Image 1: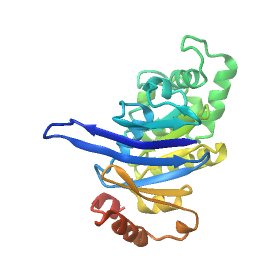
Image 2 (image 1 turned 135 degrees about the horizontal axis):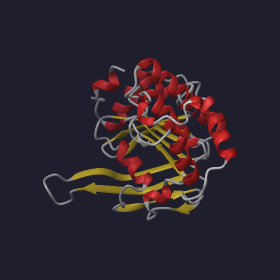
Image 3 (image 1 turned 180 degrees about the vertical axis):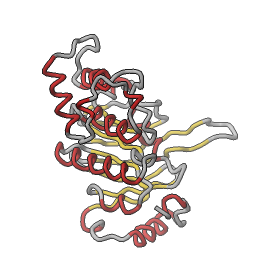
Length: 264
């Protein structure tokens, strides 16, 4: 479904600020895989997402999605079939536009319609139906500016926008980290339900070790621009956080040193 082959990316090459962000990274996801990703700051997690999304050109390597080589496809064209949520709830929506207008732009882009197309009455009914699934009352506030919503409401709306037309791939970049615990649990449960019901292939970055082992069917751990652990099936079943840290140390040759992760 998704194949990353021998991915390399270095920033500021040849300078004192040179950073080898991705180094010979390989990854294959099958259709319907839900993989969580853990790693310290600078391990390459968000850079990996940027490589998949097309935020920059790779130094070497290829990105193939459902048999199509998208290595050189522009980011805005990939966004039609790759959904992405960021840690900051303010990203992904236009605050001065209404809920309906935000949904319309996202829906028309993902359904490969012209952005100059008109949203029909049946589309608005579909938007209301989808909003009601969030159980936040947003279906009765479709004309309200998105900027008036809380962080949790905006993140839930962004999740809906990214999945309303089922994407080929969904990228979740610590999308609940900036929310309070109660709201984060709500958005995470919405995420789990949507991904499972629609069988969406998904990659999710998290700093929570328990989430990394409980959600989805695979757990990846990154270090120095590469994937050092890829756990699934029996190897992952019943695995404790302590054992996961032991496996990471054995593979990476060092202990995980991120307090945010260790204290989560």
